[in-house]
Length: 169
Length: 78
Image (cartoon, rainbow over all chains, first blue to last red):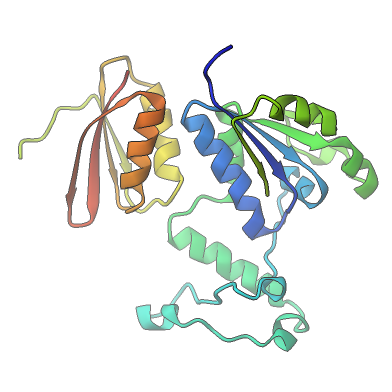
């Protein structure tokens, strides 16, 4: 048996914040000469769509810092106290928070999810889409990027049984 | 300190985790065994990350210097 380390990830969340870790870890693992597989299931499936539309929802992440990506350093360091009644009810609040997070990430030199995803594929990371959740949520293969494999729990577990690192995200 | 010779230079200044590592991997892939990659980064996390990356991949981290918050790494391809 080869001594190549193996990483197995289940990506179950498709929001902008939760979408990052699977692609960061899988691309880095591949860059460290490991094998990596990401199994996309439930709300992780949209991360495979050609047109990504991942958003972040501060309402369901109470510990999320709300900071501005522009203005003076002092202004940017303010953590805005947004009451739940606003973050949960004001129309467009998630869109605004998503825009702010994307802008902050860009300014800090963080890759976009699209960039990390294509680097994963370039480095040979395998993407497996959960067939059952696709059927349940009505996703079509045509909506997804090229190079995705399709399978179920057994497909993932067959690989994960020999994995050195297994993560559920 | 005299500058070490390198076969390829990679500027990762301003980039954040994990981009310096991913770009370093791509750059090292383009080199031949024994050749030297010079990589510069401003991400403070790259110090620990580059050491871990080198340890895992077997490429040799020959030198690391820091000046005005810019980290310079010299890596010899295995």
